[in-house]
Image 1 (cartoon, rainbow, N blue to C red):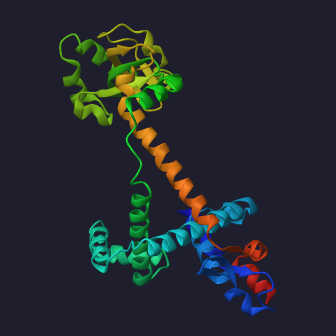
Image 2: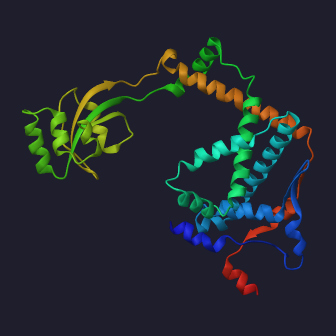
Image 3: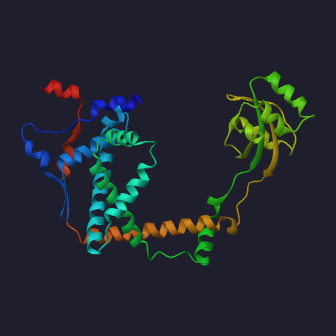
Length: 321
């Protein structure tokens, strides 16, 4: 919250020497075929992106450089996408835009909340909807680029599994059920009560942890992921071990299942591998598409002018005057 408030100071983007050369703000900094972005448009996008950062990061030259590169790359890709869609007669109808607009607006509690979002983004409804149309077009272009991506064969899945087997390795894990209490005395009392009543009943009645409603079932915990749970990996099944203290309270814990460290079988990992191979194929198709379109496109970048765009506080602007 503080970071966003502080960034109110940094929404002003200036171009060095703009006072001497006002026309620089309208000068193109990017031109991809017939798609043009002016210095002013670039500066506005930079301001919007930097608003999401805290004040120190917004003034960091390295961060500024990275964000500028992202804006450049995004404009290049979107321009290529627009031109390619036009050549291939891919478009988005007004009814499609309206349908998506209705779907998104329904996610907000009321129209005021939606309008507040637009205000926070410093955008008009028309500009927001124009960007929405481009997003829908991007999805259609992406689908067209990937239409020839095929599902991996059994052999491809097997090869991927064998080459990446170690990456699938799972740590030792235990299935935990717990009762969390405020102090040691209550924990000792509960341990005694467990001789008379079921664990889940006592968890629902006494535990202060969120999982109390489920009878204290936490679920699977991998070894070395929670420091204060390290001792429980040595405990026998279905027995309550020593009381453990953590920043969250005092824990009475029972281990109901155990699994040793292991490498899952090919069959277990097959759905995950299949998704991963498809992702890699789609990424390859996308990279090939970008490369092909860039080779046949005219690309202009005014690197010097982009570099001259800089952040200034309102205070520093007043000092110059």
